[in-house]
Picture 1 (cartoon, rainbow, N blue to C red):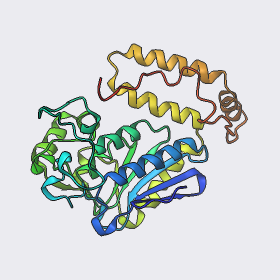
Picture 2: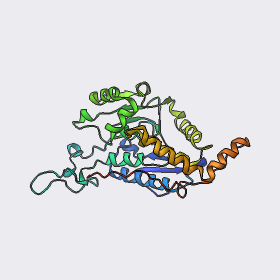
Picture 3: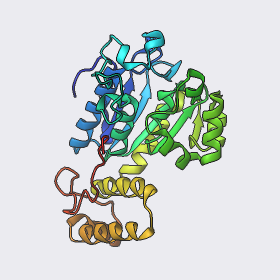
Picture 4: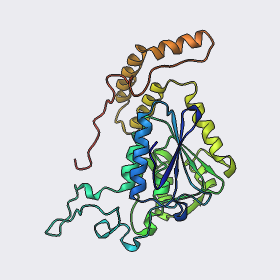
Length: 304
């Protein structure tokens, strides 16, 4: 694995990859470098058939990710005025008008959550402390989110004079419902793990000392007896059907996926191992054996 400055990666037994946000001196605050490094680590994971599942957590016990790095002060969200490595080509035209289709407008949190959404490996969020702003919204495309007892969450954007980012206006209502999503975003309050559990943002709250072990248990349960290609297809099928207009869209994809997988060796092994009462030994890999119709979608462009 590559060496990074803002994250740490560790490949473990049973095909687990742990990605740790690692800027503990800044409560793991998010910046452009962290976005690029996380995207790179996710790319590597998708291309590595030895990686079966990904766990994302934060360094230390204070924070998962305390939000955007505010070291630029009141220029933090005024990208055209920033001087750090997050500065991008200006979207302001010579006449002072704004090119609303310019890639310079893209928020880095959204670029990360879109990459998480596109992952073909299951992702478990292990929230070890404060998850505020982008620290909360980056959790939304993760398949399972569990929190330690000292975790706190906040969709604080209105209190900073901005709006929800990182595609959270798409993800959050689908996960917790529109009323809960609006309440959390309107108030911008920071709330404890118990409220996140009641609201459906996380599925479990565990003691801090047990957090990563529990995340590993969940990851192994997802992968040990399951065919890797089937898991990769299932992840994309279920997430993408959240935006489908009619169940016929699911029927088309389901039918093609079942037909395609049925012709491959994993389906035969799945049936034979069940009949023979033994653990399956699946050999198809996501890097080489995804069905020919995959991907079945056209990836949208920002400037369409």
